[in-house]
Image 1 (cartoon, rainbow, N blue to C red):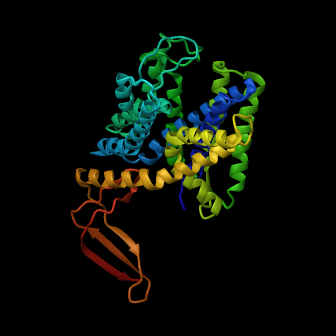
Image 2 (cartoon, rainbow, N blue to C red):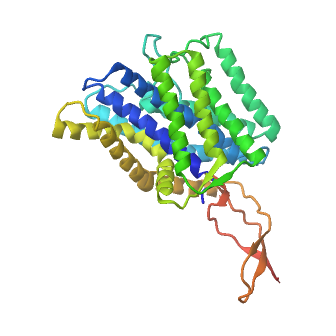
Length: 414
């Protein structure tokens, strides 16, 4: 059972929120759409991003909780994040560039280079503008990579010092940014300093604190049904969207309401952390699989929406229909799962093998495992020889499969 199956399900939910948001907004470009519907679509897309950021902070502190001040931990962390984020992002960016060139659109080389290396490009501060890289959805990765760099630096410290410095650093950056852009101004940033000091980075800190609390308090309860979790999540998300439609209605919204929506997002993450569901159910496994493919879904869903749009026009013309959104969503999900299985995973495995060749060796403590001895219950204590087991970047508790030798095996009958 995957101990974080509920978190993976929430990943899937967040990715689908972004997907549905873009499908609605894309249809609004060629079919009459109620303005409030478009604003709600913008909100649910941003809601998905907020949840992603909190999950990211949670995963980092929860997974690397025991790696603070460990020699080589920061380097392993950076390598794992680069392997996880960069190759598939560059592939998606290359596809975006190819499509633009195919349709005769111009290409800003400076912006492309900055996009590939996660450097935001400042824009003119005019209404409805935003600092978007060549691949539009990549703006969130600029924040992600900034957070990863900060997290890697504090891994050099002890856990208490490192986490304190990390939270203080993010809070200090946001506070500094208020001198350039008031915190009540919730419009999209247009300069480097306002981008990096945007209060949205505090969501990573919220996730970090949730992860630390989960490890410290060891909160994990078992629920035999995933139905209750999905119903409660759906209820929280419905309340969120209802509050937006009833009291906000447009973007950008007031900072007070954004803070309230952040609280709802954080509650969803806490709920999925505190509930440990049965990962053997068919629906749970499918949702976890979609959560595993959420990064591919996030990067490539808009391409699938465009492809579905072309087919829709071919069969039905440019007529408004609520069916376009679920149809394009299904197409995007199927494409993302295929990309995850046949592209993302093989690339990740190959790069991790290469990275393991250059990783510092690490000794593993002797372990005692239960195993039958001549048909009788017994224990085997294995002390590995000096050949280390490099860690799997995404799962620090699992060996990457590097060959090893055992120089001592002690058997004891019970």
